[in-house]
Image (tube, rainbow, N blue to C red; front, side, top):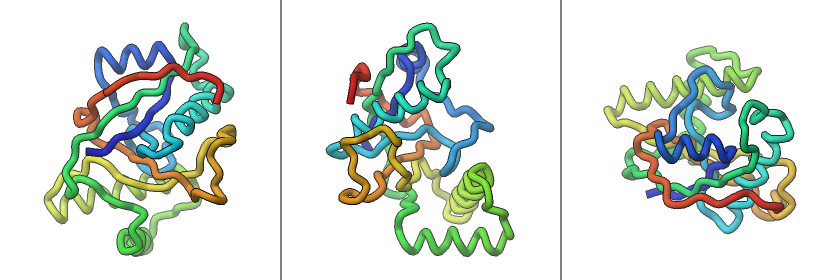
Length: 177
C-alpha cells in the first residue's frame, strides 16, 4: 500500500468522495497522466496544502462555488510489481534510451508527459503487468516554506494510473501553512 496526499477544492473533494477519482485525459501533466499524490512523509500535508494554494492563485478553481481547499489522504492499493519507480537509476536509463530510440521530442512538458505515458504502456505490454502507480520526484509548490529543498531534495510524488485502486482515508481542510 502507498499512502499520499492530494489537494483540491471543497466542491471537487465532495464529488471525489461520492463518485471516486477520475483521470482527466488531455490535461497537461508534467510527469505522465494520472492523479498526483505527494508520498507520505513528514511534510506531505503541507505540500498538498501549498499545491492547492498555488492552483487557487492560478485560477484553476474559478468555476467552483466553495473555494475552501481540501487535502485528501488516501491509500493506493498496489503490489510491488504494480509500482514503477522512475527515480531508480536503471529505470531512468531505460526511459532515456526509450526516448532516444523513439526520437521523441521532449522540449515541452506535454511531450515529456506523453513520453512517460508511452514508456509505461510499453513496459506494461512487455512485462504483462498493470502498473497502478509511478513514483517520481517533482519540484514542490513555490509557496511551501516548510519544505526545504536544499535539505530534503525534491519530494516524491505518486502518479496513480488506476483510480479504482485509491481508497480515501480522510480529508483535511486547507489552512494557512
